[in-house]
Length: 125
Image (tube, rainbow, N blue to C red; front, side, top):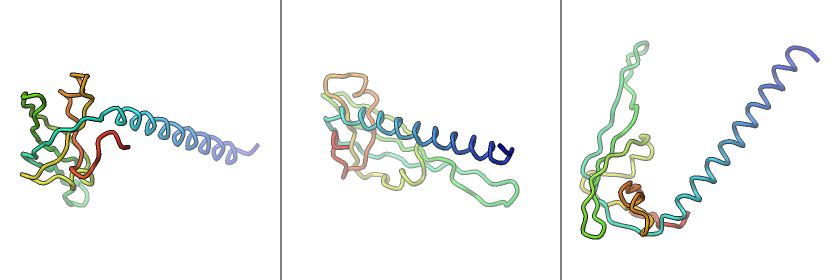
């Protein structure tokens, strides 16, 4: 077997393993989200983009976005901040409402308060 063929074979195996790993990670995340069936209205308090300047080109690029929000469950108010990509954060606007999905009997998921767009339906992933 030629060295080039060995490299291609190894690359194909690594790509295949990466795809399989991504598939199982996605399934695990969807199974976890499927359990978050209860919802609370969240108010977006601040959306803040963190950017950096590329030292070579001098172009500014957004690294990540912090979204601060608050929500209330059973009379207890929670304030959270989460980081997300620029694409995901585009759905959240200061002062608008969103949705927090959680599992009603699990205090940990209530306190974590996972943020979703208002149009999403909790438990329907």
